Length: 505
Ligand code: BES
Ligand code: MN
Ligand code: ZN
Image 1 (cartoon, rainbow, N blue to C red):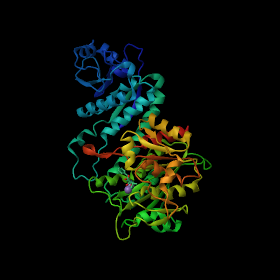
Image 2 (cartoon, rainbow, N blue to C red):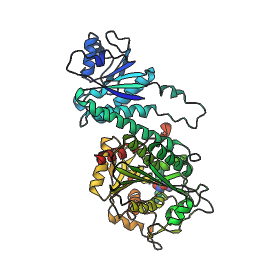
Image 3 (cartoon, rainbow, N blue to C red):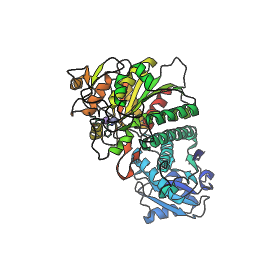
Image 4 (tube, protein in one colour):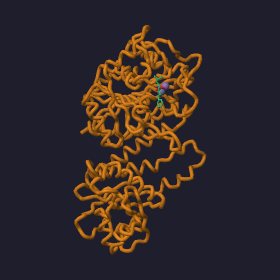
C-alpha cells in the first residue's frame, strides 16, 4: 500500500487534482446541515449540483460516520465518489474524524477499489493539524487491512477485502503538502511497527516462545542495521538475575534476555531505554489462574512486542536519537521446578523479594531488567507491561496506566499519547503505598494486596528504577481486545513512537 500526496488549490474553481483524477474512488467529506467540505463543493460544481442534491434528498444525512457510494458520476475522472458524513463542522473532533475515516475505508474496501483519491484529510479538525489528519487516515486504513493468517490453513472469508487498495493519493492544501508527506511516512512506519506488535501478540504461546522472540529481534536487527545481543540461561545466571530466573524455572522453555540498540545519534548521546515485559505465556505458575480466558495470557508479551514494533517504526523513520530495548522473556508455568509462594529470591540489584504470589511475575522479570538498564546511563527509562488486572478495572480499555515520579517525563508521554490517539492516564505513585509491600522475611514482598493493585505493582518497580528518570506503562487493558474481535491492538506503539519523534526534534 502506497501513500502519496497531491496538492489541490481549494481557491481555484476547477482543480485537476480532484476532478480529473483517474482513481477508482474519490473520498470527500460532507457536514451536517448540508454543508459541503471544500472538496465536496468542487465535485458538486463539476457534477452540476449532484452532490448537493443528494445531500438535500437526505440520502446522506451528514451524520458522522455515514457514507454514500456513488458510481458512474458524469463530469469527473474517478469511477466512484464516496461521500462521508462528518457531523457538525465547528465541532469536528479527533474521535469523530477517526470514526468517519474508518467508516470511509470500510466502504472503500468493500468495493475492491485499488487507486483511491482521499480528500477527507483536507477538513479542519479541532486542535489538530493537516499532518495529524493525514497520518490518522493512513493508520485507520492499515488498522482495517491487517489480517492474522499465520496459523490458519486458508485465509478467512473477509480476508479478500484486505489487499485491494494499492495506491492512495492524499489531496492536500499546497501549504501543507511537505508536512503531510512526512506525516504519511510516519504513519506507514508506525503501521508497520503496529503490525509486527499485533502479529507477535496474536501468535500462540507454543509458537511465540522466548526463543522465537529472540529470533524476531535478531531478524529485525539484520533488516534495519541494529545492534542485538541475546543472553541465554547461562549468561542470565552469570549476571545473577535471580528474580527473573525464578519466574523462568517452571518452564521447559529457556529464558532469553534481549538487548537491542538503535543508534540514530552520536555515541555520546544518552539513550532512551524501553523495557518490555515478555511473558510468552502466563499461567500464573503455582498460584495458577482460573481456566476461563487463560488463553489470553499468550498476550502477556505485548510489552515486549511493542518494544520490537517501536524499533521497527523508528528505524524505518531514521529518527535521530539513541534507543535501547531490553526484553526479559520467559514463560510462567507451574511445575516441580517452579518457584512457589514463600520463596525468597535475590534480584540483580541485591534486594531480596519474598514471592507471595507466583502470578505477580511481571514485576519479577522487569525489576532485573530495570537494574540492567543502569549500565546504559540512560536519559530516561520507560517500561511497558501487561502488568495488572487491576489496571483494567481502573481504566478499562481506552487509557494505558502511566506511573512516574518525573513530571516532565510523564507530561511528555501523556502528550505523545494524546497526539497519537493512543492515550494514557496518569495514576499515583506516592511512597505511602510502599508500605503495602512490606515483608517479614525479605526486603519486600512481590504483592501489595487488593487495594490499588496497579499502584503497588508500580511501587515495586520504582524500587529498582532509582538511578534515572523512569516511567511505567501498564498496558493490560489496551494491548489487546477480548470477545468476538479478540486480537492484539498494536498499542502503545503509536504513543512510544510519538514520544521518540518528539524527543528527536
Ligand atoms: N499478566 C497478568 C496481568 C493481567 C491480568 C493482564 C489480566 C491482563 C489481564 C499479571 O502477571 C498478573 O497475573 N497479575 C496479577 C497480580 C496479582 C497476583 C497481584 C493480577 O493482576 O491479578
Ligand atoms: Mn501473572
Ligand atoms: Zn503476567
